[in-house]
Length: 236
Length: 291
Image (cartoon, rainbow over all chains, first blue to last red):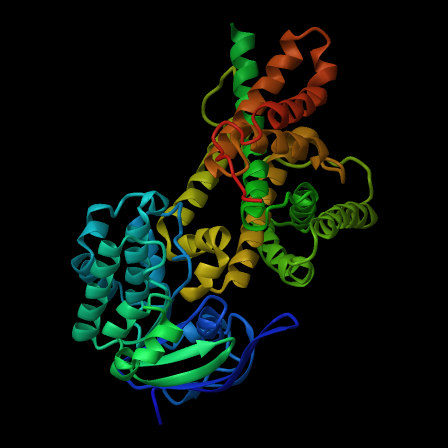
């Protein structure tokens, strides 16, 4: 059985259905990208895994069925969600944001060590550790969101458009750090992106979502190399 | 000069009680965006609980601590049972629930303990080992105890894991859930804490204004004024606002002609003035919403 298995997943915002039977799998230690246009259901897929929307169908993580769990319980299983819009606690300091990321953990020495390792990945956060998080730049807040997720020591990270609204140079920097995190920590990642070209560079597998359905999936190199897919679906 | 100092010190004492009420109000406001109009009546009820315990023979300090503890539990239960079901309801529904709570507590207290005015014992001895003509022993005790309680509350929010989680849950509930914070329970905890802090205010003010079901009406109004003056988005500002209102109230009563009749009017003028000229208060943030 795969590490994360999503079967016939449907999601609803009140009466409006946003996902219409999404199926995909993610292997342990791998990075899987979910691509698609605006409104295709990418964010909803992540929110459905975290139990933030009403769903039907099955999500099985590490052998455990997630349906019926609260968001907090899902997080407790080791799934860290880097949300759309970064979810910064703007009035809290950088350090407090990271401490919140470790909220479900108890061992203080481990937490302190992990905080140093986050500052290792993102030296700029270390320089600004006492600063109010709301005063950080967009790129720094994205780094903080990833750092906060790392503080959980996650088995699986859900990343919602880490490139959103950032300058190309910063996007590159953040993706390089994500590659380094996977290399060192072996964290599995489910990555949602509109920026298909950079996501396909990092990901091992990719799925293409269109109006709430998976229309295509496979090794990212296949999607990357297929001229037609690139032109029609990915637009680059 | 002595009179001025007496007025100011007594103002600080009563103002520190307003600070407690203001802080309780601001805590709930930060989490829910609404004023809990029942905060005063909850404190009044807590004070009656303490009074009953004293009547049963408990030492007054034990009664105080028990009442504060019971208020905490009651606050948690009120949030879980009454407030939570309407948390996504329109603003008016929520306000009506708060006003309903106010009326219920007021009439139930009257029904159980009657509306006659009762004396309430001070927590502090008559003889503190020294004498001052400027300030009475109860007032000294009030200032010391409230400052101690407020310092504890701030330390809790600033330095503990749960305090940080409560701040996070109030500021950004979605994000808080995503780091594993149980937002619902943090809100309940906030209600419990607010009820406890209110209870401290009620038990301290009761020896001054005497115990009766309507004793908190004025105190709550001054507490609101303090909270607004300091800024409803700033707990520290609310505490300072409470102190300032307490002192100003005394000055107005003494130095403004006919002022002793105008004390409550003054609180209302302050509330309206702040809302008109500086809605964010002295220390609050201006919240800008995109339309």
